[in-house]
Image 1 (tube, rainbow, N blue to C red):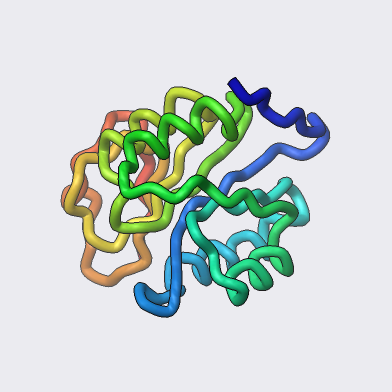
Image 2 (cartoon, rainbow, N blue to C red):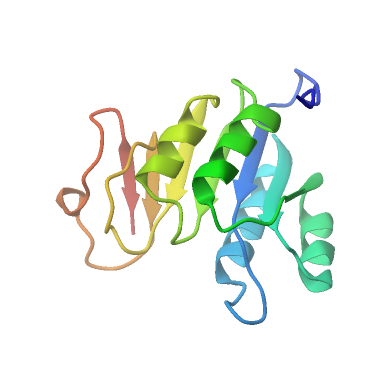
Length: 155
């Protein structure tokens, strides 16, 4: 098994996870890159994605401290396990932004991180995240199925 990288204890690490391309659009990535540009002063920002094109690679390198290209797979259960076993550390925060990160994916990721944050537009699944961010209008906390520890940030 591949040994995880060791990181400086001086800056807490945030892993950002989203995909984007010309065919599916760059919205989730751009949203996370905006967060990276704000949080980079206080945190080590690491972006994780599958199959990035040159545009994405350039944008991520400009706005983040590191890019990790994940093995290409459609099996998100395997991907979540790979992230938990090879990339994330118990002190990490991970922010997920995408429609494919279902409850099982979140549950697996949460096994090896300090905090899990989901950016959500749809409120269609059960969440095990520590925090949910939804910027849409008309959404209420009671629209979500969450754990009792989950904080929901709306608006």
